[in-house]
Length: 564
Image 1 (spheres, rainbow, N blue to C red):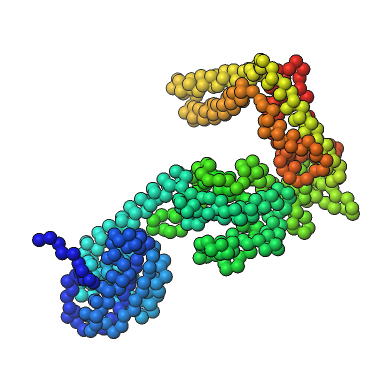
Image 2 (cartoon, one colour):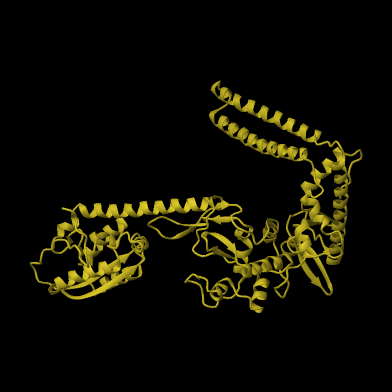
């Protein structure tokens, strides 16, 4: 006979034996619905575990056995996993058990109480027994009072193990899906990051929120111009520019429930914006994870395990600006007394002897810099390395002007070389270096191969063999890296140099420079060393690129090029 479809509210109740002893119980009706169950219900796949169905089943049990119970209290955790006992109303129920308000717990089935095997066993076999709590699970016909053996029956631990394994398998599948989406460049966050919106046509794709993007660009611009993170946050607050959460509320966008109603900008918020790679157009996901399907604590993931997918959406900040900001954030910087502007040379000055930063001091109307070791630690550990601000600023400005002039000259020479019918792109220096390193690597390889035989012949000990083998392997690894870099450099030289080379363009942008600013320092200078005699040396950015450009020019001209 074909199975008849259930119509109306009809529920199956396991066979239940009426009690032979008279006792009145304080009943707790516990109901739990997980997020996974809720999704199934929404899709029409299964409604057996809905809160309504559980409530109807438990109420029917109470009504048909009302003579056994003096009261009933309902506890409902809607949208909570069973692998975690840190559920609000579950904990409330346990508290009522400990205070004696409850001495009987009834659930639709064992999985509603807990899906964690160890937690379920601890509750049923230990806590409930110690507290004299009667436990009833209707689906499994378990009743610790009427049939104590039903709790100890093998079906209870087996059912709990199956419930636990169900959560493990579900968690595993969810992780696999999330990992696939991350690696395929799909955004899986609950909310779009500040500056972006979820694409209405594809919720896993981000599109720029123009108004918020302007705020982000302002933040980056202010930092490069010398404003501290604290100064940026103060400026935004003073000018009524809404913080990320306030902006979302104004725009009617979803906001996390943990966010304050009227949050202000803070230096921490500015830091998060300045270090978020998502603004370059790359997706960086998987920074945090849940420890396990049982332990729902969030832990940080090592950076090397983050999932990076480049060019998944339109950038708000170009990569060059982002990298420039990251380099600036690593510097040891100090703000002015007002706490807004970073001093122009902050984070750039170093002592060539002890390697520490130079500190800024004011004496009357004069500003000068001196070694921090000498000033703050010990005058015997280093010397003063002092220089006045005006002199330093003039010297650095002159050096940058000279470097700009050099870049312009290089660009003109390169243009003439590239216009010639024949160009030389083979470097004898690089060829000789590569050949020498290859010979050195071959020699180390021979020594390493002979070690084993020396050990077997008794010429070296076993410990010596392992020590020397590790040393040779380390040397070989370093030589491999050097060879790779030299080979790449030779290939770049073979491709020639264009007058629009990024290193040249970076300096030629400031052909009319007549005043030194912090953003120019950030773009062009790596660091400045101040010597005891007041002389300085400037390490410019793109120094390696300039060396390669110089070599290309020397290969294709009779006279060696000048370098500053």
